[in-house]
Amino acid sequence: MPTRTVLIWLSLAGSALAAETMPDGFVYLREIDPTIVQDMRYAGDRNFTGAPVPGYQAPECVLVRQAAEALKRVQSGLNAKGLTLKVYDCYRPVQSVASFVEWAKEPDEPKAKATYYPNLDKRALFPDYIATRSGHSRGATLDLTLMPIDARPSGSDAAPERSCTAPQSVSAPDGSLAMGTNFDCFDVKANTKASGLTEEEMSNRAALVEAMQSQGFVNYPMEWWHFTFQPEPYPDTYFDFPIVPRPSH
Image (cartoon, rainbow, N blue to C red; front, side, top):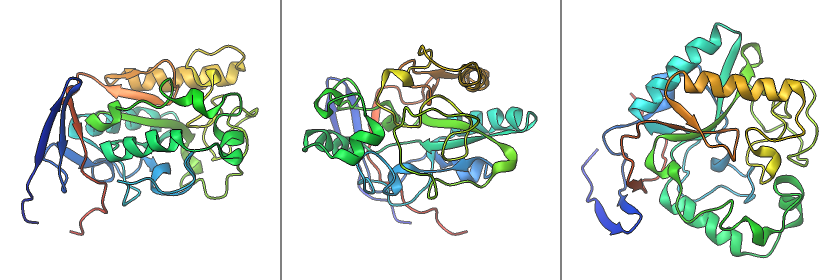
């Protein structure tokens, strides 16, 4: 593949890199550990915007190599306990974040509200829940959950749309372990140590945090599914290359 010109610009929040191809240092998670389940929500229409998000041209998890290799070690430990990781989002292009900001400015959509932010007005999502810049764009942050290993593969296509805060008994609608809310739930119940959870939900969240922390991932306390590998290889750089299908070998 020929080398493309890389555009660089600076801002007070750090540097941003816009490129048409994936830079060195980034990898497809599937090439590091193909056993990790991928349910890449923003590459399809089952997300809070209701449509594929710009920048997601393939349902692939892309990460900096250090984070991907650490995730492989997490998976190995979980497999011994009969569990597997399931990732929802990994690297997120800057253009995708910008599309979220624009979505937040549009008129409310009743179905999205009922599913993803049932207890909030859409105007309250920005900037408290949807920021102009995301750590995902630095390549070491990802969103994920736990699943029973014998449930693989399990996608979200057959999962019913319902309030993200609806009770979860043994499992979530997509077959993952009960965590008290679905992924991308804009609600205080999504806080990692939220009140009102069942013992099983608290135990499942604690198991996820413990497994991830063991390999250098730090949880974002506002979202139980959100983790960042530290130290970040690119702590001040935001990337904008699109997620494209993996090249055939």
